[in-house]
Length: 513
Image (cartoon, rainbow, N blue to C red):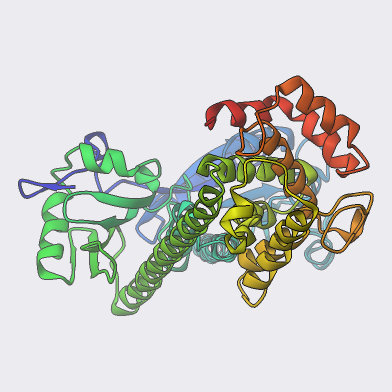
């Protein structure tokens, strides 16, 4: 947060130097120690993208496999063909590609006996990137092969990271309307951005140190980070001071623009929501050109739009939930019943829907739709609805109309929850054996959501005191539900109800009247 002109961040994240020496990991596989020394000497001054080579030696194919299993992100392997056996190098290539499933490692085969392994056949049969005779491999040719291979490795790693990042973006975009998924989405954006700009530590597979934060006047609302900011959360962001980051972020927020200085890139965008805006912070060792900056700006802008859309969707859903429960409670209170009844029915219904195997979306929808099951009672006259004694046959027929009235009230809506509410209102008094009302539906003719709410509603109604009856004890409620299995209630739902009875009672006891 911003307090006394300071941006709050986690202090132990600040001491890492921006400029860290990195290397390209190169594996030399040869049973001749002299080859190792000559290779290292020839490449001692080699540098690509301001990173030197770090050499790892293996003197047999078996040793090479062990190293590859334990050492991540080896960019290039220089492999001798003939070692412990005449085809040890070829077998090693086969294991790398097919057993270790390593498709990124660049492989250059080297041989002192080219006649034993003809170049045309080796290039055709094995997934290698170059094939050289040791006698022809001058320092200049070695330089060329190494440079070409590392450039290819860099690009392949970038493509793979692009693919993984894009996969995460596509996956998270399908449920971005949920605020709880926002960090996943923003993390995927950061990962994709890093890959597109080649901003990756290839030897250690370290992510770019960066974060996106939604800032209000005095605190961080939401944050997602990568690299050394991977585990940062809004509480950490709000409670710890970061003297290295604060001046950059404060200057950018004050200017309302962006700043690129000393390997740090900060962008600020104001928000259309109640927040002051969004901050993107990145620690970038490589120089950024204007095209790179344009790409970063584009990704950041799209991310903030996604955040705002998610927040607005969450607000709309929260308002919808509040309206539904409020209307449902009003309907229940008309008949002198408590608002906790609709809350319990909603929770029982969600529990049963999950146990039955409905989709997450259906589970959430039934939780929101179940409270509307008796909405039609709002049209029932007080003298019938609030009558303390038993209803006459004529009064009972009027009372039964609340099911179809509720359906008529809701059926015109095109909203998923209200459409489900209409079905529940119309069918929650139907019975599994066909003896219910208003249509006498039976078994699978009754919607599963209505069958679920029917059981939840009866269980809770029996355990609650009503104007026309006293509260039942739990033993009698359990006995009735078991007796009505296959009659009033779906047999499978009754079984699931008792399989999850402990959770049912937790809801009952937590939200008691």
